[in-house]
Image 1 (tube, helix red, strand yellow):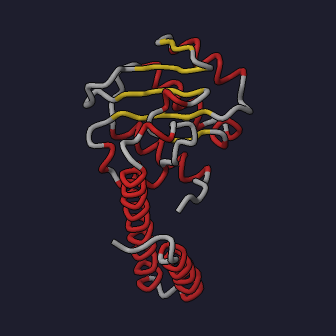
Image 2 (cartoon, helix red, strand yellow; image 1 turned 180 degrees about the horizontal axis):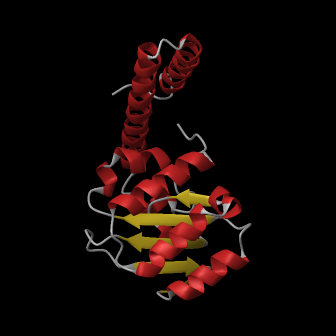
Length: 190
């Protein structure tokens, strides 16, 4: 289920992340706020795991994680200088920017799972086996599906409470489409 992540979803996630986590480097907050306020950059942002394989990426870490505080990768060069990375982001707004966020239990967090994308630059042999990669993808897809389904169901309930028939019908159609897309033969339910 590789659906594009909307700019609004990315923006909402970054706002939530900044509100709920304290970052190890204060410059990381500046960078995320810059991204939030520049739609052109936000359009090119992709949240991924293993950003070290990407041509241009940032690792940002919260206080609750033991990972490195900050890393910027560009064409096989690595820096911990947040100002250089900020300058690169400002000067190259049309280039894709991959972001890896490290925070406590990030692999289990539904909100993060809803915005994270498959990293197209991870080598095929990076995962132990194709079976492991397939199982991980199925788990991620199922987690994202469950999260989106839960949100739509809550919005449908709200529409019913508000007696908003138009909103109810629209959201019900979205839920049906989501379920149809997830239940296609190539994605088996677990």
